[in-house]
Length: 500
Image (cartoon, rainbow, N blue to C red; front, top):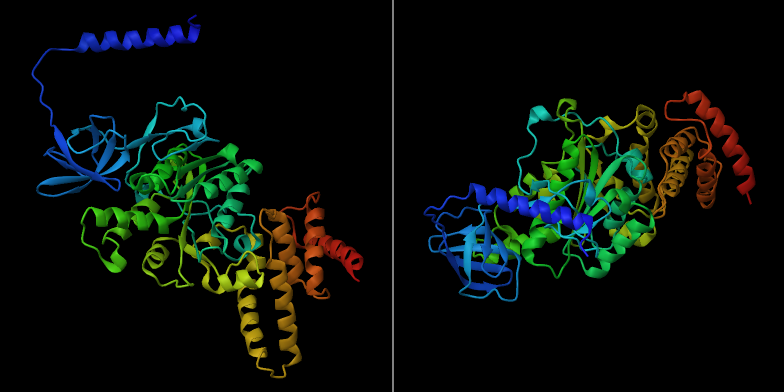
């Protein structure tokens, strides 16, 4: 029995067919037709189609699709985006005459999709008619505004010492297994209730890692305001290549509507390797480390689309957290240095710190945020201003003290305070710190309220301080005198309780 919805759908289809017939005029039409010469490794070589241009979409007679990626005198090289089992040499090919785009819109929130917008979560395709081009020019300079609002990650080291602003591009860099993805997931989870829409792009990852990330986001309620764009390791290389551009198109749509967005590219090392693989298969001349010469341009045109728009252009923002892998801590390798020069700063994770138990294993001496300080709240900026320098000086003094030299009392005191600060900066995964709590520990440390404690007592004191701050009426705009009075009372009581 036909339902009312089906009846309306059929009526709409019939109306469209009638409109098409009313506009149809019999006349001579010409169309280009090519033929597949060979197919393999995600690449199709096509003969014919003389008017094809780069990034044109090619549709094959069996329903497969590809994007033109290389042009030479005789053949066209295309990367496959969808491949049926029937695609073989001899299949006919046609130009689609449109650019590659993905469906975009609010119906994608909470969904897991592939780079073409097809659902991977077992649910129906979102009913969305708006589409966004994968390749678009970045916003012009007159449409941009200064980064002036902080994006809190919930990680104490980042929010106080390496702050990130909305619209900033901050690189997460480090060896495999040092917690780069965990840091990005923590940041996404911390956006809950902050009206920031998140896009998590997973490129070339194993299915087990993809499922783990999605389940983690779902467990902490972060999937409700997020979209996961997945091109796993078994996907076609063409899909892995376009995955970050598809995620960027989604974020760009919300940014232009005035929303704040956060996009994570996990990771661009795999993306660069995929691009190198495709380029070598297409017989492009290799450059440094066999990467094609335009790899810098590929990543720069992707990351330049992240910005904060001026209020006259909607006032939205796109904050980008690209992730890149280093080998044995080599930060000066080709792809890492490219991305460091494109982004507005980097957070470097050190494998030695990770194995020593310092988590998150952020190496403060090699991490920097070039513009995040401008977006930091003045109260936090004032308190955190000298802590980074103080911590770096402590690390040098601690290394010096290992030679067994007898130190002055003042230097011993600085080393003792540095060790307390190191304990304060430690933080468990999936335990985001609230913004008032971060200001509280900064004031308490600068005023010496932790100086009487032992390093082993710091964790307990911080937990009690965080618990008390949940019901505290104090905010970032409260007077410093009020903070000092409050913290003096709280920490003196708690310290007495935690003293063995």
